[in-house]
Image (cartoon, rainbow, N blue to C red):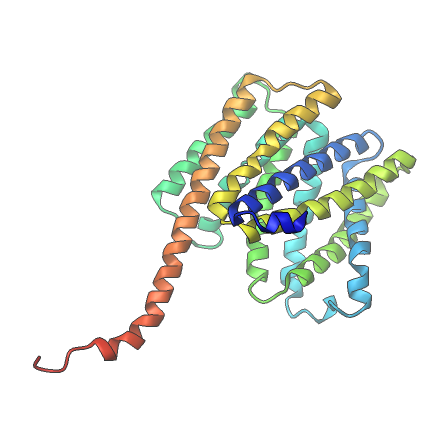
Length: 316
């Protein structure tokens, strides 16, 4: 099957990886919601972190990754702090909101990434991306409808999760300059398990056998979904593949209707469409700017080499 997949055009491969990963992530959200009937979401997050650490333990024991040797422990600490916070907030959002609403609000993360890029990374953000970001946040307001008194705690939790994810992505990019992906994953598993153990023990309840099965399923499916997500952007171009991530919304609508008889109101669809359109435009602009930077870098390298040979002799 993998051989057949590799024979497809790269962007088609990427789209298939991402669509499959989106379905897996939606299934993870379903399991988180089901498990929330038995235990608190912070305990679910602890199970996710601890089981993830167990999956990475063979790499630690065989010496393939040595987390204690990293020179950037402080960077890993803050990345894990933001990542763990976003994970807990995301789990609570899924438990508190209809599945489609939680998924749609999570799509606001690229909007927060623009704000983080401008305010934290000091990146120059021009008017096109700022305009798309403002329009996107208008879409968020359409979804949560604060003027109608429907701004639930769950919506605020979901928005806070999106903001924390944006900051976490920025910190991961900084770490990726010198740290291998396996080191980043291992440090996250170690620190997040330590961070979550005290609050999880504070609210601890023993799940039944079905609950344990859900906990293991959450950890495994989240890990597999992340692998599919990485493979998607490794196989295809970001601008071509990224739009397929938003198929998670119809998956969430279907699963929410099938299991809990949930059906989003029309404003969820309208707001989600605005947010998705804004996020796609931002991704398109970032892809264009990245290509321009690469071309400029190549031209800067070639210029000194070409300069002497192409220069005209004096007096010619």
